Image (cartoon, helix red, strand yellow):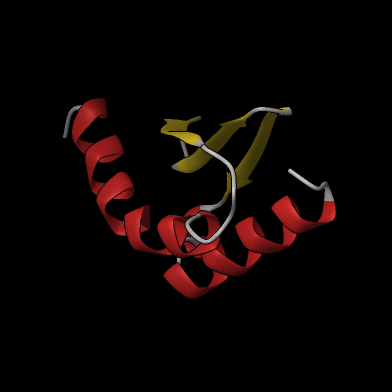
Length: 80
């Protein structure tokens, strides 16, 4: 499967939890999802007015509820 298909699949799977984690804030965010490495890690980069947060998820950490919680808590922690 080409690399872009992996990214599209991960993005579609993570769209809803990322939207829930970032949607009710008074900021605009741009999100990039990419696969890195040979074991399938997924890098989620969140760009906002205060810079960038990069989160690396292992394949077994891609459950929507887990991703939502990590993104929400990280954005809250850093006031992003």
